[in-house]
Length: 161
Image (tube, rainbow, N blue to C red; front, side, top):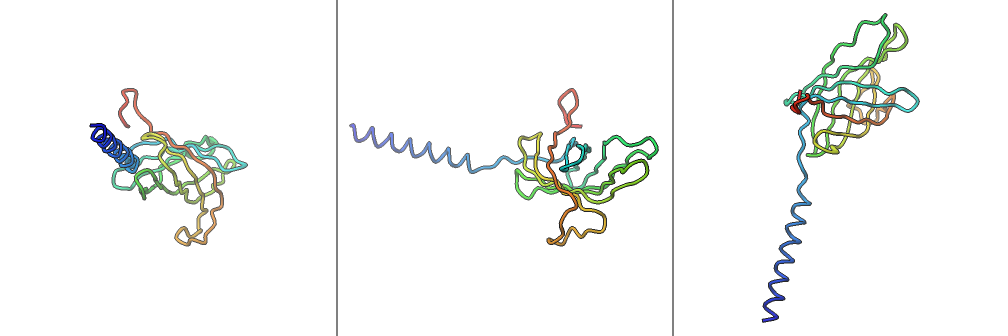
């Protein structure tokens, strides 16, 4: 009787361990589609904020929310694109123009590569490539790099905007 009890206990333990390992192996899949507030900073410069509207088809738009001089026209949305290479990782990129002083602009492309911290939060690295830099060339070095955090923007009712 004792051997039967120990045998059953062993089968239960092995089954429980297998279930735990199987659930750990499954990665939660996150959805990037929606509106995001992205904060990022390059070393030696101020913090920047932009809005990222990610459509379900891998396209979207960036809108730089940084304060600008009243001598400059307000920022306009620019085209962006995104992809999820893995269920918990996202890459999104698009054109941006940073204001310089009262009349200048630093134009280029921002590339964000991050990992979902939760369904509504992403963090990772950001790179800025100036106009004229070849993003498809792996040897191209970004003009600036830094860190970012992105939070999903929701309405007061808790639904996505």
